[in-house]
Image (tube, rainbow, N blue to C red):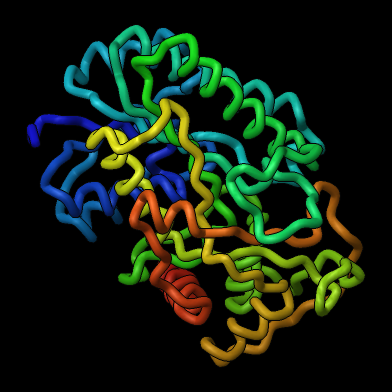
Length: 345
């Protein structure tokens, strides 16, 4: 494979984007460039990537909603053969309060990237989607052909719309080969503990809230609701290690490049196939870290679904991908990253 082949990663300083860049750099096949305007991330992430991989990554600090600036990247980087598109706002609760922010950014940025795929003949496109597209459904586990339910938040709706946009583009422009990866709940950090989830804005996901409570950044965490129709009344999610997610992107990219795709728009769930409740996640963290968490039970949070977890058969069979990290390992690496961050404070 031509060593000059370039993969463009949008949101490269973000949580999943940065871990995917590390895995891409672990191969000898690709040059990697990033686009990230640091709206919810830090430029220091690239220093951490370099420390882990001993490789520098070029990042273009632009807003993907600015099409002129985006096109300039493709004019500069002549050998882009694939795009992995992460960059999007993703906080469910915030999207309920500020829907315009989510519709404007998540839809416009995707539209601009798809237009650039056509203008600059980029054939391979991986889309960061979400299990939130399924809505609040009763039949579990979720399969890729499970119909969309009602979106429970503007964030979830942008992912539904995003997938429909991509599908429509592939029908109209068959030169595009695309995959939507529907993540369940990425957690944990790189095994080195040098990089992990560190949003600039307030943490909204369970595991960073757990670790920030344990370290003392958050005085007390709230479990949002304990009267869901689940085994202990708390929300059930399918937690998956971020490095497993990152590796899935490499496999999806190779799946397209090796022309194994049966259609121009493919969908894969990325999960472990096992549901874990909020209280079970807290218990796993307390066991692996030896820390006791200070938490209370609060009201349900707008936009949350009660339970969702994945059927993993398709991704295992077609992508040859299977998660490797256990729940305990997810918690161990998340805590390792939290402790690493505390050294700098």
